[in-house]
Picture 1 (cartoon, helix red, strand yellow):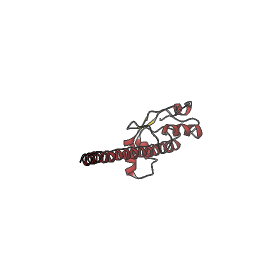
Picture 2 (picture 1 turned 90 degrees about the vertical axis):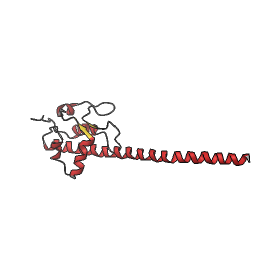
Picture 3 (picture 1 turned 30 degrees about the vertical axis):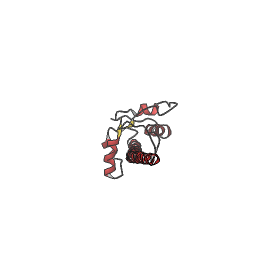
Picture 4 (picture 1 turned 180 degrees about the vertical axis):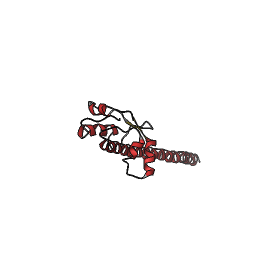
Length: 150
């Protein structure tokens, strides 16, 4: 009789743990899935921003864009995607292209921060840090004397 009670008690414990653990595991998986999806969307938005900024500078004598409307001039993707990018990405529109061009490399990371994620995250799962891409652009192929905006 005692063994039967112990078995029932263990079955009840296992059932209770299962009832609690399965929903917790599902919530954990959904939260992590949303976090990963958000990071990937942020990374793609940052990559698109960098491409638009570089295209704008190349088309405008090395001038830094003043806002999203400047980047709209060089954007060639779907309108819906362009509308999402400013919701995810923040840009320092007051950056001085001469300062960016003349920035000295740091031992770790880019020497300036002109592009960042609005949600504060700093993980770049798909590409390099967007600021590093801008820095590499200036070092590799940027114009010798960028003109400031008139």
